Length: 106
Image (tube, rainbow, N blue to C red; front, side, top):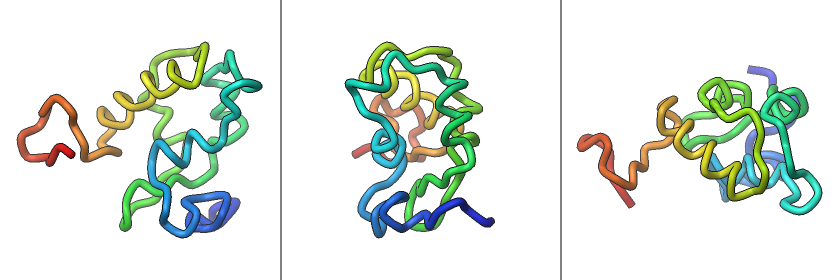
């Protein structure tokens, strides 16, 4: 896929040093960007790449297809909505409550 920037460049995963939620969070300023609407975030960043793991890159829009919450009041609120959406969409192997015994917890 042709991405608007390199998934592993500084705008992406920083050479593979950041994955998933960390790539999403670096697109936000926790003081200036909130409250934030889901629609606004996807409109601004939807076509940008997010490295999920060493093998897989998806778009922000792919992840946000699974986010139900329409607005986020804070960065914490954003994380609480996006984390479960990433798990539900199969973008995260980590399941803190052991939702899937085939997947490894940290």
